[in-house]
Image 1 (cartoon, one colour):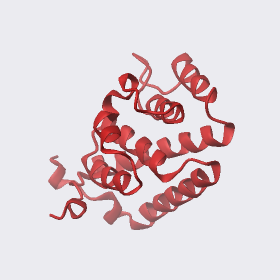
Image 2 (cartoon, helix red, strand yellow):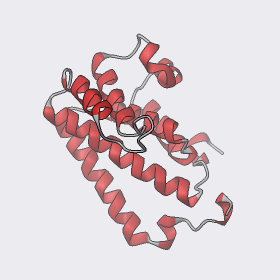
Image 3 (cartoon, one colour):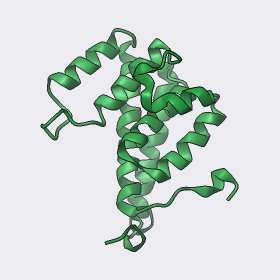
Image 4 (cartoon, helix red, strand yellow):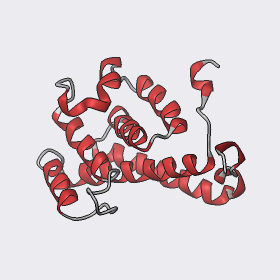
Amino acid sequence: MSPTDRPYLDKSQPATYKAMVGVTKEVGKASKAAGIDRALSELINIRVSQINGCVACLSVHVPAARRAGVSPLKLDLLPAWRDAEVFTERERACLTVAEALTVPSAGSGTLSGPALDSALADAAQVLNDDELAAAQWTAIAINAFNRISIASGHPPYTANYGE
C-alpha cells in the first residue's frame, strides 16, 4: 500500500490522536519544569525524526527549532553531532538519550540491555533525574508521532515553508 493510499490515523481515530497530542503537551510542560527549554526539546525531536526518516515531523520541528533559537549551524550539523564541537554538554547528553531510545541495540531489535544502560548512565553524568526523565519522555513522544506520521503517509507540512 502506497503512502497516498493509507488512512491518516489522526483522521480515522481522532480521539486517540487527540490523546496523543495531550501526552505531548504534558511532556512539554514537564520538560519546561525540568529545565529542558524549547530549543533543546526541538533538537531531540529533530534528531529522532532524522533517524526515523519522518518527513512530516521534520517539516514541523526544524522550523520550530529555528523559531526557538537553534542556530542554523547546529541544525546543519545535527546528523553528525558527535563530531561537531558546537553542541553543549547538555545538548550532547540529551541527544545521547534521543538516539538510545530510537536506535535498537545492534542485532537485538529492542531498546534495552547494556547499550541503553550505558547511554542513560552517560547522560546522567550531565543531567539531573528530572532533566533525564524529560529528555526520555521527549524522545518517546516524538518516536510515537514519527510512527503515526510514517504509518499514515503524512506528507511534509509545507505551510511552514510558505508553500
